[in-house]
Image (cartoon, rainbow, N blue to C red; front, side, top):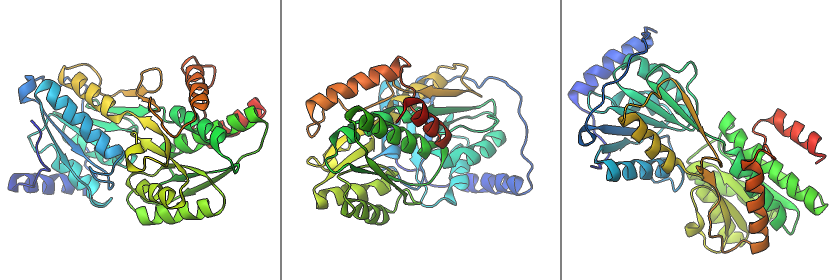
Length: 356
């Protein structure tokens, strides 16, 4: 069963007041490692709290919700979501989500780590899961799910480097975090790999929007990059990235999508997309939690080897020879022959060791 966005209840308000008071007093309770009881599939309930991108962001949050819908269709479990309009909603919404109703609560995105860490300790009988970040000192009832986003980012960086005619490419991110570093440095390393392969230098323009929702700002950033000579831009800016795609259409240049295949947004301009199969991971881990698997207190990492990241199989705007070479790059990453960097330090070391 799929429910619309949940509304608050008097009981939930009272409970939240008690919990938020506890947070304010820093009375975070410790828990011991016990199991959480299983339920029949048709009794199991899962809620998801989005970040500010919202459930229709054409990217990360939308994929997460699609994954829960798939999980519901396959198991009969009931799923619902709560949208966060601003960052200050995160703790409140994460607190709303259990309310004695849900068995598993998902938080989408890196910013949910602290709210989950706090609320999970106050709800030891509820399972929590965080997608795309790791909860520090994870409680026994929290599962962190991370993606090796540097892997598909390296592949699309290689594609950008092979495709550019101006030898100028761009990267538009949202907020500077460890997760965004995976995209930025994986992409930059892929561009460098292609540049060395072709014996030329490629300039990379990088800028953050400081927002996952400000499409107008992202478009302005992309406009500046395109006007400076970039002919391919990779965006990893959540819902804000829609502005980059709009700029690509107006400039008739290439853009690389993120998280899901975004070619439908600009069929003539999306070169390819760096897939982060959030839907696959959320459905898989929700099933594991429902089945009572011992995944609490753990961090699960998914990448090319697990087929949870990649690029689309259909890329109409991509040269077929470049696509075939990109597939070879993916195989090298899967085999460990290429290890894409995910931090500034790893990136510098990658360049030195590769003579790039």
